[in-house]
Image (cartoon, rainbow, N blue to C red; front, side):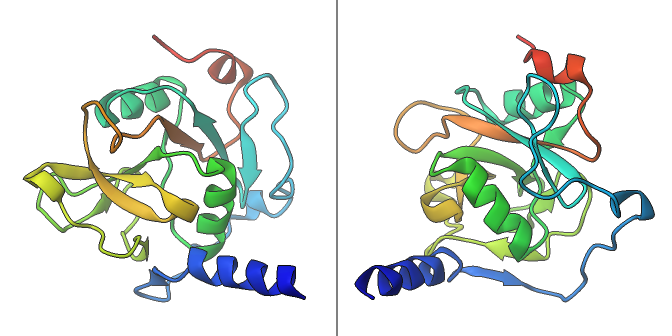
Length: 183
């Protein structure tokens, strides 16, 4: 009983700051109807994971947000963009508590967050007190505690910098895209 209660508290805490600002779910394309289940691993060495017709891979490599974006694009994808609570839960599980860059920025105008894939920024999962633009240069999005989001600087050293990033593909990544991460 005590374990079940603790699990419920953790699950409620994990999504406490998450919300969809407009109820506009992404329609499923006909080609996605036969997509593998959310937990199916990709075939091939890259270990990308499938979810709702998209593929995701966590990369444990400490680089700047701009470099993470470039590396995902070089692999045929983009930094992961989260559009729903279900996708957020999947990403939080995939991140596994790691501090990873995601694909949004407010660099163009402070507070006006935009996903790199062009999808409207309507779903949010900010950690309490975030975004805060600490130091005046936090224009990039990252996962943090329980997968919730924080704004971070593009680059730098220290505790407040992500240790990797999440790539997303709109299709299964090709084996040559998965095998190696560009330098």
